[in-house]
Structures are given as C-alpha cells and as structure tokens.
Length: 141
Image 1 (cartoon, one colour):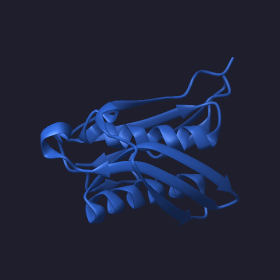
Image 2 (cartoon, one colour):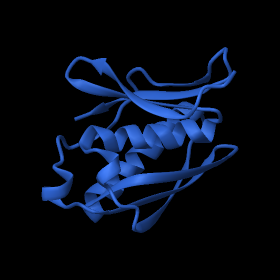
Image 3 (cartoon, one colour):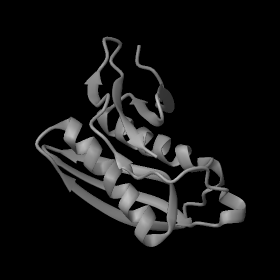
Image 4 (cartoon, one colour):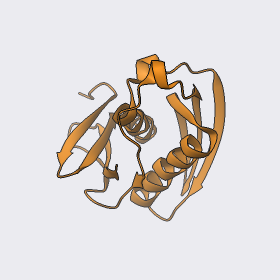
C-alpha cells in the first residue's frame, strides 16, 4: 500500500529537516519543495500566480534534490517570491520543474525564517519498503 503524498519537517539541532513523501519520486521532490516553503510561511497563503521554470542536472538523486532545493532558494531570493505549487519531471539525471507562486507580501506571508540553502546533512532519496518515495535533507536557516 502506497502512502499519500505529503511533506513534513524533522528535528535537527539549529537547522530544519525537510522531507517529501509521495507515491513517485517526482511527487517526493514536489513535496520536499512544499516543505521548504513551509519553513518560511504557510504554503496555503501563497497564491500560485506566477510560474517559474527550473532545470537541474546532477549525477545522483540525492545531489539532484539538493540542486532542486537550492535552485528554489535562489529563485525565491532573486525574485523576492514564495512558491506553493510544484511540478517535477525526472528523466535520467535531469529535473525539469515548475514552481508557481507570488511576490512576498510581508503582511500576508509573515515569513518566519530565511532559508540559506539545502545541505548534504541527512540527505536521502529512496523508496521505502511500502513503496513510497522519500526525499529528505536539512536546510540551513
């Protein structure tokens, strides 16, 4: 039985662990991106008005999830945006993603922290025995 897609945080000293779980590897990558947003604000208050395309390539799934999250952090910082809807297509060592969001509204989004980047700490992309895919790592805040 495959579990439904979801995101969650896990404890890790001063930083924050992010985890995405889904029935496919792509869904796990989408959910970990949502967990990244949730470290900053409630994703439900971020309107998916503007699409931003993101392309990444890496030699392993683990490095690809770090590149994906760091690309999102870069786009959030340079565009002054937050994202709440994500789609991911994985082909070999490439990720083609789209993040939908909107410019930061301090009053409405009330950002809690600034994410500096994804790290290699607690980095894992794997399929669990129940068939669910898990993508996780610690983000520096």
